[in-house]
Image 1 (cartoon, rainbow, N blue to C red):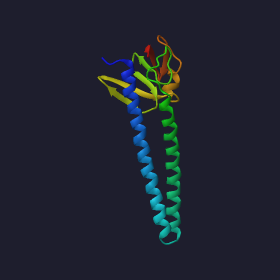
Image 2: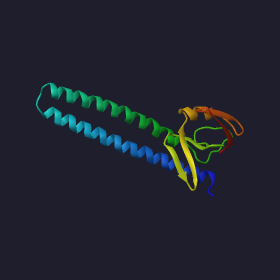
Image 3: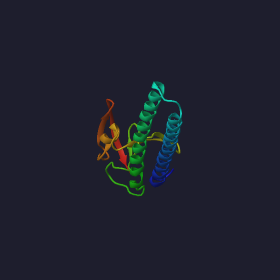
Length: 153
């Protein structure tokens, strides 16, 4: 059986890899949009050309917002110290409930470590905000279901 620090380390590495993957994808998207904009500027003018440029500008703005979101998420992960344990749920905590085990980090969904499934959730996610600050023995209601906290590590 793996210890808590090892489990948290594996989960944190997974979260970091997810962020890196998202970052690379969005950078490729932005690069592709900019290339298309450059190609559009060389082609002929007219209504079709203007519409195409406008659509590309909207795509670039959207990709820029996604990039900002990824940068915000990547700033959260270095704040997680896997060696710190506390008796209340906080960033970097493993929360064992009667239904799931949560890792408070960023939202990347379920991750299997060893034979256990962990749900990586952000502090500001709906379930993360319900768990925050809770201790062993406390309960929270999510999606109409009561979850009892069995342990916080």
